[in-house]
Image (cartoon, rainbow, N blue to C red; front, side, top):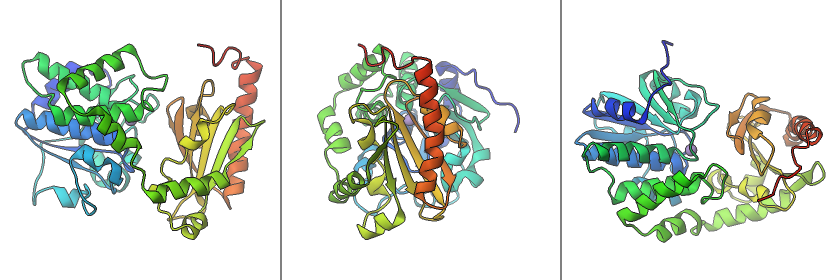
Length: 351
Ligand SMILES: [Mn+2]
């Protein structure tokens, strides 16, 4: 890999994006509202600048998120073969919200080397693109907003309703509906500017949060049965095996957001879900969330994973979910003990 330039500014990004006449934007695998909203908004911005732009990814898009990229119906998805016109070769590839090339999923092998510019907000990522911008903001959508604003300051009208909806969904979602610590006055100023563009933000929130498929609610029921506590109830855990999925006719998508159940419980500092992989039954995919003090990106790093301080993930191989849990708890117990001896919890929770 040649040198990676990580000292870009928003203005540099706009300069770079101005050059090519055609672009392809990549999202991360298992796409969430932030990667999709960032991609959709960037596509809209660049299209308004007169460029030919497509979004590709390797995965199905959860039904409730399809409105973000302008897809309707069940059959639609954004896979490379579906969207790129025959023989289309863009002048530039850009990734959004992708902190490491492996998060491109099945597209990693073919596309990593082609990506010229990566726009991201994960502090502990593994840069892979020659031009990498990592903003310290709660959502990648905030960076795309700044890009739009920069283009507008150059006299280009690029922030239309479609882009505003996509960016609002991105930021709303990645900041936990503006609940996370990552939210700043600037986040709200960005959102105010989006609302001024004019769209039904309450409808965006309804689509994001209040349109859960019945199967997802049933998954919650199964998850609550599996919920248990460790470390004097400071750690809440949900294990999901393939058998639990099969017995209850649930899909992976149904349990995607199950982790959010764990963190909202009184006294819980760390919430964790441990999901058995479909492809490899000895592989467990772990999501961790923390509330106030614990840095779960450090805990996940012990297993080769990472992410944000309050939201991270990792994978590990184990005989069964119980063994996986024990190995994770060793690291978590040690981490919490260290925080206890540093009195890190003293004052945590104060306003
Ligand atoms: Mn994100």
